[in-house]
Image (cartoon, rainbow, N blue to C red; front, side):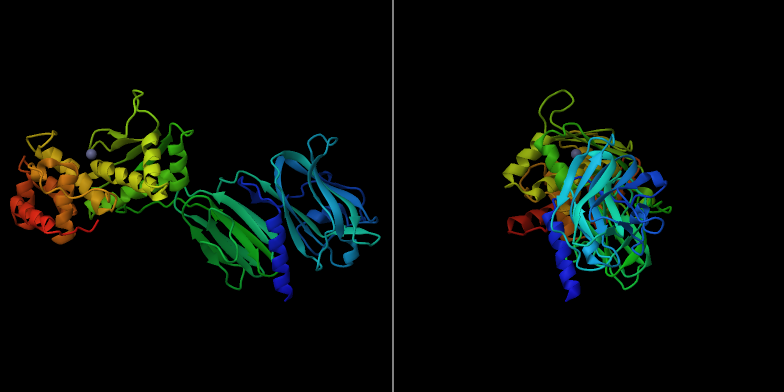
Length: 508
Ligand SMILES: [Zn+2]
């Protein structure tokens, strides 16, 4: 019963406090010098103001008055986003009841940050967190208690500040003591290298949580390690990841939050270096992409690996594609409206893909304000274009041009990969084009996907391989189909045409 009550109470004051949207993580200020802590009065030598900042609930600050103030000086201007007060070991009548939290940069003019009235602590050494909607930084913060709960003295065993402090910089190390039922939140962090990884050690029953998008609760999280010890580990990929420590009982813990660089051993799939360039962040299209994709560069790097794995079985064959620059822009480089374009020579290992923010915004509206319309379109463009970055190029005599085999191979393979990955759902097979498999783009792409879907699931990989294996200008659709399927391309096309004309449906 007691436990439930405390937990409810904790939730209710977290809910009533407005937590600002900015990135915060919590630190306990380190007491470096006595001058950092001052007070209206203290009980020298054992119950001085320093004891309110010594990370121990077994010591306290006591002043021989029913009211008083205690002040903490930071090393530099600091944004305080919340504070935790922990009651003393005895005499609930000495607990603070009414107070203000104030900040200053000159020691003279104090700015109001928070005020509380009629507060009480239901237990000894109980911690209560008060969140602030503060956006100003101060050198010094003061708790000014104007009355206690009826006793002759005023006391607190601990004061902790939640501060904003380079929230995206990892690794992060922290240590803290929390009393039963109290949370401490870190982040949010973005995954840059691999996964946000957090580990705790210490004493007591520490529970570790992670959640994307908002702070974890005991009911809502994306990762949890809640065994009965203080040694916990969680990891989570993505963007906007909060790491949270929950004190199942009184705990003292160390936490290490990291985003380790994983060096792939030789032979592993290696993503190209993706540079995401947001040319017009003020546009709705850009805002949509940044909201929906969370971490665009990481999203795109993963799509590149997806494509490489479709085209190759051995990672060492696919490492040629090194750099991908992805631009979101309102107009093309000549200042004209556009949809999407690619620059960079196929096979050079370098590619720039540009996508129009106007186009994306339009798709989003036409798709009924659907997030998936945006992510599917970007994934679709990536699957097509990135295929150009990885695929083998056949040696043919006819070059790149409408209806020619090199062109039909290049654009058909790219759309075949896109279709197979499920990002061309709005398009249909076209079996009536007189150019047949030489019609390129989706006409060729659906034909290749037919072979994948109905004849050989590894066909795309094998088809790409023919472009390397058929040397000395011997590559053609006919020779490629003969090599992979031992059938003529015309024979397979006719079978495909009959299948579609009879109402056959491909999976895509
Ligand atoms: Zn293309």
